[in-house]
Amino acid sequence: MPELVIKGWPAILLAFASSVAITWYYLPKVLKVVNERHLGDKPGKHKIHKKEIPTLGGIGIFAGFIFGFLMGVNGYMHYVSYFTAGAMLLFFIGIKDDLVCINPWKKLCAEIATGLIIALFTDIHFTSLHGFLGIQFLPEWVLYFISVFIIVLIINALNLIDGIDGLAASIGIIASLFFGVWFLLSGDYGYTILAAALLGALIV
Image 1 (tube, rainbow, N blue to C red):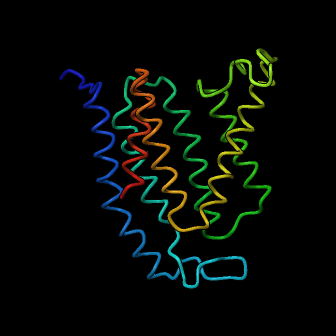
Image 2 (spheres, rainbow, N blue to C red):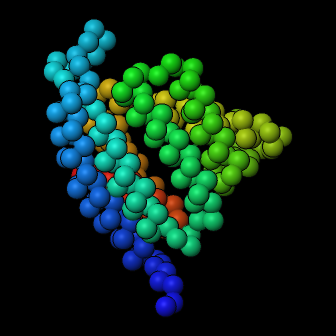
């Protein structure tokens, strides 16, 4: 039987639809278990919510995102395994932090490891500063250092705003929509599919 390869718009729609379906199915089940086991984030001195907020919803969101992404991206990214490995590492660190509150240094080490995987084994890294601050070219190791630093910075920026319910997801929806359109117009279907899968997981 010949291999079935889905390309173009069908791949984008498949990523989006499957991401929505998986997240829609699993997210309520995860939240139900969280409520039954009393695993929610309880109010505290440095928290703005007045009642217990369910945690671990990221399990359903991540499941939808990674399923939709892998369903649609076949043939568009040659480094899918490395990207998935980095995402999985970050996912499990986040889940553990929700449950037992990880030491900040351990969390930082995991974030740096994720940044290194992404920067070294994919094409998601700086190759030039393109005249930013008057700088064109830098040594390769400096560009990789900047790439990892920016990745860790973005991870922590989103983590900080995640304390307000729905804010991180809303920003993620806007960013996914904007970048998805940008990548589509530039003809980069791999990243368009990634954005579509993330958008589908976040809008549920």
